[in-house]
Image 1 (cartoon, rainbow, N blue to C red):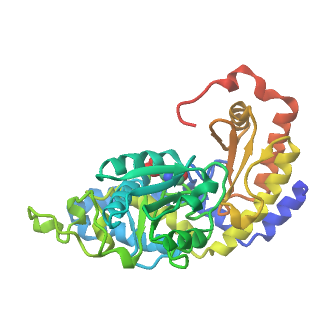
Image 2: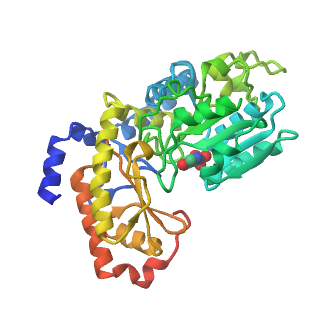
Image 3: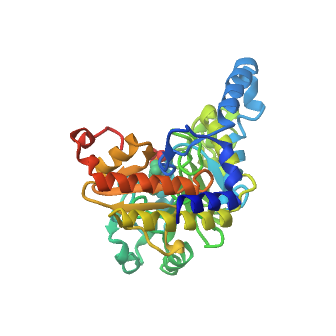
Length: 404
Ligand SMILES: *Cc1c(COP(=O)(O)O)cnc(C)c1O
């Protein structure tokens, strides 16, 4: 594809107009949507109004003017993006904290089964939190096996299968319906981490018969740095699972101020403390960038961006490690190169912002809401130039940063 052809593809793109919903600096090509989504154009105004009017003028009265319902209201806006029903999703806490709540809850309700099974190389917090969660439940243990051994490792002691739907480095995607069915056949519950799936690929939790899920607000949902996360509990499990972080916002009547904890019915019991209202405002504005956009349109554009990126990235000398089959991957593309860190640093200096993932992965988010074909063309042109002239070898690119 030539640059003119890429421009023509942008002109034909049914999602082309959605880019105007974001504020992107003109001097960068932003391909890091999967670590921090771009700033939605409406977020500064929504935040300013939320701070000046709702907080500044309405003060405490705002709790009854939309704040207290925000976790539930935003959960109901996330639900259609992940194939959940209203009342099955709530926006709260971090992904890590939500993992803890659901893992402990699932273990305690597992009727004597004690094993949490997960994938070696899963996102670190998933494994770290699982370690802490099994330590909190007498007799429970964590078993971590290679991806290809998961099916065989499911057994009569598996309480919970904990998996990330789209892998954060390789981009490999599990077949949610098939894996869920296999786990159910063995009597296990499944907890899906949707951090790299929500807003990136079509997810159908209820279609797959899923039990539990968590996901991130600051990646493809564009909710801003440290945005509240979300969790999903299928309606059929809601009455039987208890939140181990039994804080007052998950109480049936928080403002009855009783000594004893009595959980709220439904999804509200998964709240713990006072919701982070300012963060929720930004998350709500982020989710609104999906208004009127179908996941099918997103997936189709993501697939086309991927094909262009892959062809030109491989031509530049990088090895693509993300599956070629669109159904087998998420919406990012990763390449392996032993010098991934300095190459990525040189790219950033040249105005192309991607991600490095240790030890040797270059990862680029293909966010169809605001990434166009010409962007991919230009980014890969820059990548090709950096690989060809070897400028990434300059000593300054070898210096490591604290956040990568
Ligand atoms: C980004 C990500 C998280 C983030 O967890 P936080 O608690 O928000 O830091 C968790 N799991 C996966 C798979 C992720 O990609």
